[in-house]
Structure formats: structure tokens, C-alpha cells
Amino acid sequence: MDAAESADAGALGTGARRAYSPDAPRHVRVQRQASRRPGAFAIEDGALRVSYADLDRRAETMSGTLRRAGVGRGSRV
Image (spheres, rainbow, N blue to C red):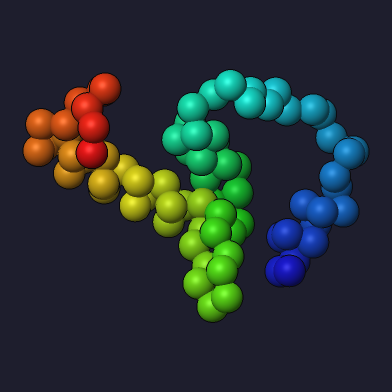
């Protein structure tokens, strides 16, 4: 845990409550977390570590590629 993460952990429960919307689409929740804590790990599996910022960038790249290929809401991929 780096110094920023340690400070975040130490502050848990001491600040204002943030609204959490479990009904929000997953991509929206990832975007929110990427803006709050971009360096935090979204995925950890052995040596693989992907930050929320990187996950959000990858998702945006993929969605742009799919849109340019004609994939829209409701399309099966």
C-alpha cells in the first residue's frame, strides 16, 4: 500500500458519505472509481494489475471501436 492508499484507508469512516448506486451500470461505476482513485487496482490476478484509470481507458477504446463497427445498444457481440 502506498502513502496515498494508506491515508485513504486511515480516513475510512471519517468523511462525508458518498452516494453509492448499486443500480448504476458497471461502466458508470468504473468511470466514477477511475475519477476518484485512478491509480487503485481494479483487477489483480497474480502479476497482472490493472488500475481503474487503465481499465476505463481500455473500455473507452473498445467501445469506440465497436461503435465505429456499427455495434449499438442492444447489439450482440
